[in-house]
Image (cartoon, rainbow, N blue to C red; front, top):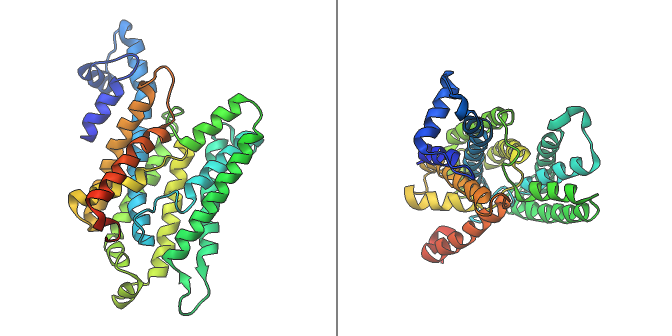
Length: 334
């Protein structure tokens, strides 16, 4: 499904290219094959514009879905995703701040992405600092404190974003701010793809190694301790990794909601709740979903482009409500 979706999405757009022609152009680019003079324009559209964008959508979708699975297990909350911990909002604030102030100018075109990455990491650090309770009974890094701290800080960051948008100089800055707060892949290039791919791939592989730990943590801290697992220590390690992966994704795509919330539940309905299975399927499902969501966002009202966050929300809300009504036990019982 993923390979087929990628091939179709690369060929579809204002200039439609048939799947066989798309595959031929991709093979020519990979193998150094010959392209006729009258096909150069189509080749450039396929290879230089659409392919990096579609691949970036697949990578970010896979990462968001995997991160959503891990966060929901860490905080034992079916409503958790990167937004709940404030990491996505922190990345947006970092990117928007650099856009408005012109900071980190020494990094050139990478300044805004670096600002998003640093904002996400700073927010994760703040959430962690606020969440850690005093030593002793009831102390440590509890799931409830993580959720409450993340929600509170996320709301504060959204308020800060509103203030920045209000004082933003000009319509161009406002448009750029909308991009970072609603997400999108319009700025995708071959240069933006390698680093985020490494972060997401390594993150998914490490998450898979923690699959049994996540199964135990999902049962509760007391059950985890009785089985020889320190839940606080595991949460700290995974929270750092989640923040790194989320920061890398926000840095190239902005904040995209509902993927990390809904896709884990859909996958659990298909393959069960064992994290080894969920973390094997969820990244692929997230990649497929994001490829098609991005296709809709750039073709539905072409040549204009809809904010990707609006597309994922319009799809995610009814799907989540339908899941809630059909399988209420998956969301904490009746």
